[in-house]
Every structure is written in structure tokens, then in C-alpha cells.
Amino acid sequence: MKTRFLVPLLSLAVTFLLLGACGPASGADSGGGGQPTGESSGRTVQSGDDASAASSEYRVEVNREADQSGVGVPKPAGEIVIPDGAIFAQDSAAYIGEEGQVCGFVAQSVYYPEDEGRPTYIRFDQGFPEQTFQVLIPGKVRPRWAQKPEIYYINQEICATGLIEDMEGTPTITVDQVYQIFQPGGGFGRGGKRRD
Image 1 (cartoon, rainbow, N blue to C red):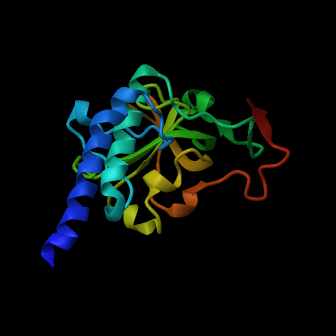
Image 2: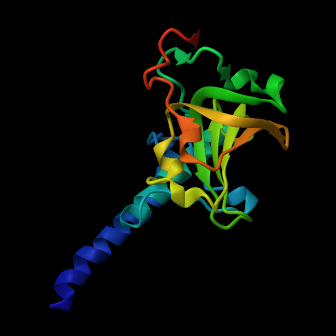
């Protein structure tokens, strides 16, 4: 009886091992959003739910290599429309120290559960370290999000409101409420500024 269940389980494990060993060398991009594993900095990234952990780890590994080469970083499908009065992510450095609403395309979104403060970074336009702007969600407020923010916001056009600060050379808004991050197309994005 045990053998009947053990054989399919072993073949599934071997398949995941083969995918992990062959996948990154093939150069395929699985479209997982360019989330690095953070291995080079000793960080780990939590991605996907536990039921699909093996496939999520594979997807993250492929995209980590794509980010390092600059190939495979997701881009918006067309122009980005933001509300009037908002700031494009690329222009946010000029507004350090001011309250504002910054909008753009999320190219990378990463959760670091083992780092101090368990931060989640939502990075705009490019992955680390080339991001033009980032949103920081501290670990202590992360439970306020119904869905994992590193998965929910990836490849989306979003806006963040708050104080724009310089964090190690990157314009950053630290949020503590879910409503500080929203999608600009939610009713008042039309007629705003545009950028390709």
C-alpha cells in the first residue's frame, strides 16, 4: 500500500529537481516578475504559497539571473497614465523630503522575511539596484494586506502616497496602511499625465 503512493511522490520530486537543474541554464523566462532569490546578499525570498513552493523557487531562480543580465525585466504594455498632480517614479528623486503621490510600473517586488524588520520592497521600472523608486512595507504592518504584496503588486501600474525619503540613494515611500498603495486606473487615472 505504501509503495503505491511512494512511487508517484518520488517521480514528482525528481521532476522538480530536474526542472531546477535545467531551467536556469536554458535562459527561459517564466514571467514570474523578476523576483531575485537574494542569494548574493544572504537573503531569502518568500514567493508563492506552500503548495507550489518547488515551482515558485524555480521561477524565482530563473528571474534572478534575468535581472542580473538586464534581460527579462518586465515592462509596461504601453503608456502609463497617472492622476493629475502625481509624480512619475522616474522623477521622484526631485521630490525628496516632500509628501507626494508617486506612480509607475512595478518591475520587482520582494519580501525579505529573514532581514531585520522583515521588509517588503516594491521596486519601480527596474529591479534592484537599478530601481527608480521603491515602496517599503515594514514587516510589522504586512499582515494588514489580505494578499501577499510581493505577489499582488508585481507587473502592475500602481501609485503610492506618503513622504518621499532617500533610502540609500533610492527615493522611497514607507507605507503603513493598505490604502496608501492603489492602482491609478481606479476611476481617476483618465485624463492625467502620460508617459511611454
